[in-house]
Image (cartoon, rainbow, N blue to C red; front, side):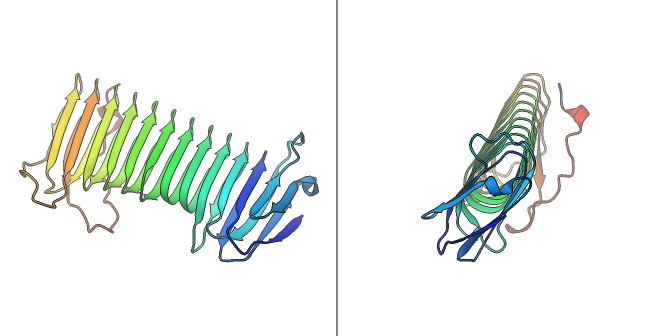
Length: 293
């Protein structure tokens, strides 16, 4: 079944699905097209009220079959999505979405580019390529963010967290999941029981980590002044950073605060590429046997 609505401005989409897949494509257009395939797709509630587009199965519908929903809508639209076991794929070729709220039970969530996002999954993976501000939560699924330009608050039970390029304030809490940051030019706060924290390149900002048995490895841009407060009751602390003195006016600096019961802490200098280049891979990763348990 297919429905077409005139939408000359960005819309507010409210969509839900029990199982299957939900794909949204945001692009430069003045209409919204909804296509649903699957058994009894004609009974879905699909309607427009002003800027709001609603796409949902009937409230008391017990059908557990799979459906595929495909929606094309204007760029900068806002989305509110609920999906049980369905995968959510939000595509933004050459543009972006405005605000996105998406929640799944076991389905995955993937977004190209968005302004603000609130994402949650029980066991599905979450991936956002580019976002200004994000709140993300998963029980056992992994969470990854490509480029973060503002703030992030992320939590997982056992899932790992990866941020490729973080320029804002990052707060991450996990039970046993690892946190890896490719390039940091902001602040990161990490709390975990047994996860590992790895920042491949810290250009400036603050790193604050509290772990029980999890290890910490930080690559600091070579020549950057660093203040440290590191306490590990039973773990080893290794700093290979040379003394470079106080920062000059306007020079980048880094503050490191790590409290750990038995985790290994390693600080190494990294030859930093130009600001817009990708961070280099770490040359001395923490092997599993190096992380006390």
